[in-house]
Structures are given as structure tokens and as C-alpha cells.
Length: 306
Image (cartoon, rainbow, N blue to C red; front, side, top):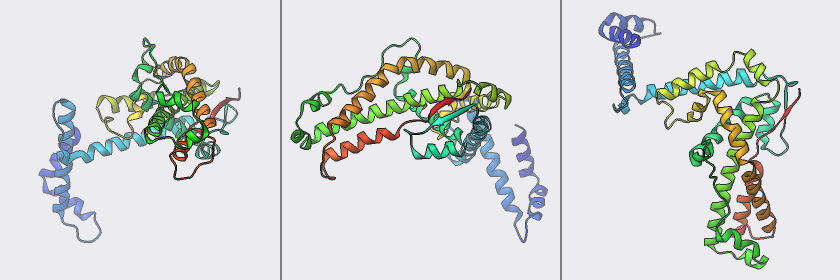
């Protein structure tokens, strides 16, 4: 309301436009400032209408202000994560990066652990979207993987048969491998997030840095104003209640342990089965690439130093 009142006054009284124009180097027409005041006044009124009633459709002409708010919130959360996570001393935690992507090794070397935490939140959020029942305390039904006829039949095939698999079998296997990889990535993200925050000394360090309150306040506003919907920063809404998120991930991590082992076993089995020489243009070579991609989808292992 204050912003709207100020912009209304600046738009109504020409002296404001003239005063702003005089601050510019060279000639700059005051009418441009008046036009800018009107534009931002419309944007703020549009946002106010959107916040007061969820039934009001916000105008696309003023999508810019919501984009900037979303961008500001994303930058703010990332800033606080850097302050909380990147400052964790090396004598508190270290990381084993032998099985993860090279970029995470560089992030660890640069003490940019918050970027890994941010990515883990993205993968956790994806897992939550595609398998919401996993995050339900009462639900015990977990997704199944590699249950198709193709997955069972392929293990009884000869080398010659593997080299000549048909397109239908190839598509089924690729689909199942992709689903399993996505699930594993999300499950590993849960474990990484949980292990880092529960590592001895980490909670004490975070509290000494000011705690999670600023992050929780920002992300709660982000959520309640519905600015998160369709945003690239949407995964940050999980940080509205960090303690509750940690508790949920404890349950998820325990619930998924056997399913993760089964998925990893199935992928290793397929990797061994398709360890054959083939043309780079063949369906089998394409399948091998899908299987090989899983190797890089690991997070650093948190090593407690206390």
C-alpha cells in the first residue's frame, strides 16, 4: 500500500518526473519517468489484487514484477544457504567425491557445498512430485521398477539376441531405466541432505550463524503468496520448516533403503548383461549409454570429522 501511494503521488505530480529527469546526464524527457511511474503503479496494483483474491487473474502485462520478486527470493535463499553451509569448517565435515560428478568434486574443493545442497533439494522436490506417496508417513506402498516382460526376458537372451533387440524392447528398457535413475537420484538426494544436516557439529554451526529462521521466513512468504508455482526456485518451498523436512526425510530414507538396493542391483545386472561390443548406431549402444548415465548420479558422501 505504501509503495502504491508513493507511486501514485509521483505519477500525479509532474514535479517528481521533472526532478528525476534533472538527475540524468544530458537530455532526458520527464515524460519517460512519468510513464515508468505509471507502469510500476499498475504492476503494484496488479500484485495487490492477486494477493487479496486468488480468484483474480493477474495481468500478463505486469508479469515482470512477479518475476523480479521470484528472482529476488531465489537469490536471497541462495545467499543464506551460502552463509550457513559454505562456512561449515573442514574439521566438522569432509566429503568423499569418488563416485559423483566432477563438478561436485570442484564444489567441495571450493567450499561451495550450498550448490550441492541446492541441487539435492531440486531432486528431492522432483521425487516428491512424481512419487508423492513416498513422503506420506502412513503410506507403505512404494513404486516398483523393472517389472515389465522386457526386463525379465532380456536376462535369458543370448548375446546374439541382445545385439538384435527390437525397438519395442529397447523402448521399454529405456523407459524403465530412466524411471529407476530418476528415483535413485531423488533417494540419494534425500540421504545427502539428511546426512549433511545431521552430521555432528553442523547444527551447532548453523545455529551460530543465525539458524534457519531467515530462510524459513523467506520461503514461507514465497509459498503463501503463490510465487513459487511454475518457478525455477519452486523447490525452495521445502525449506519453510527445516526441522519438519528433516523429520520427513528420516522416514523416507528408512522407507526407501531396500528399494534403492533393489534398483541399484537391477541396473548393475543390466550393465553386466549388456557388456558386449556393438555398433555405435545400434539400439544396444544407446541402451548402454542410458545405463552408464547412472554412474554419475551420485552425491558426495558426507564424512563426519567429529
